[in-house]
Image (spheres, one colour):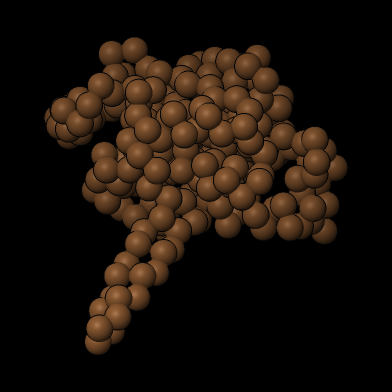
Length: 225
C-alpha cells in the first residue's frame, strides 16, 4: 500500500502560522508544483503558532540549530541531554518514515521546499538528514531568512550529501537573504503594518496563481522532479 511507483518525493513546508484556512496557499503551491510535472509533492504542516514561528525564523537562521541541549544538575553531577529541535524533528521524521517504507530508493530524488519560516525548517532538516547519510537532491529556499553569509548556509553548501541549493529570493523583501538581524526585525514590523501587500507574500496571496505557476516552472527547470 505504501509503494511509490516513481520514488520521487518533494516535501513542502509552509510559512509562519501554517495559514489555517485564510489563504490556503500551501495547497495552492503544492498543486502548482504538481501541475508543473513535479511528482509526489507533500505538504508537511509545521507550526508552533505565528509568533513562535517568527521568533524561530529570527534565532535559527544563522547557525546550526538542529539540536537543543539541556543541562540538569544531579547532586555533584551535570547530566547533559541533546534532542532534535521540534520543527526540524517533524520534517525529519516524515522523510525517514517514507524512506523506511521504501518510497524513496537509491537514485530517486528527495527534495525539500520551504517558504519563509518553512525554509529555515527545511534548511535545518536537510543538514540533519545529510549528516546521517541521506542524500537531499534539491533544497529550495523561498523568501528565506537564511542568509548566504550565515554559518548555516555555509554548512549546507559544504555538505556533499546536499546536491543542489536553489534560492528564490524575492525582490524588495527584507526576509529574503537578510543582511543581519536588523533586516529581519524590520521585516517583521513591516509584516505587521502592511500584511499581504508586502512582496514577501507574492506566492501566498489567493489571486497570485500566475506567480505560483511561474515559481513551479522555475523549480522544474532547475531540476526538481
